[in-house]
Image (cartoon, rainbow, N blue to C red; front, top):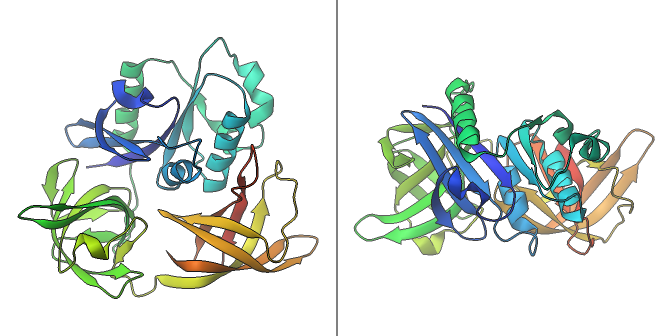
Length: 317
């Protein structure tokens, strides 16, 4: 069973004709299922009023579906977010008589330059995404997995249930998982993927986990469930910053911004910036801990940035 996660950057409810509506909050989830092949569509319902929903959808997706009604600042910010999150596979739907020649100069040098332009037809899009899921061949590392939590609730007779994505590795029924950054440990009572029960879930899967030994009071969005002993909990982040070409302001000591990783959106303050001819090395102190593997990408955002609030990303060594 293969699953792909797709960020839908479009007018709200665009995905309702493509998939079946599921969980609704500041992000809205839609499911497509055919036999053992599944697709999860994620719409940033709370965007553009809040930047976090756009980040969440980009961060947890493999691909993007971008519906363009106008070439404006909102499209530019979405494009920069997808670029900073590294979503290098995707599809573009052009509407309102926009032609590729109008779009090409804007997306040149970004991940969207490689996206396919497709027809604005829900049935065609659904079948195409199922075909992609059918051909998905993820290389699964048989290591303790990590699940990033985006929603959680109490189910009578079951207890605490979370919805989230397996970011890497394998999670199995009856696993004992640390509930990071808390000190709690939870046991996996059951695993569901698109309403079917399974004994395990792997990287790329959208899951619902029923948990023992914790309550909803112990959970929050951004919590990471894992038995991986090598995962890190950091109150300070250091790495090489890559600034997007559209961002014109220098990084400065004392600057307050937000950083994002998986389903975590955390205020940060720059402690130091060191620049040379090749790179920008930055160290940030955080308002609360962030959970992350040793290597990866953390998106930098500045909420007072006006029409563009996405700055770049930090590559962790």
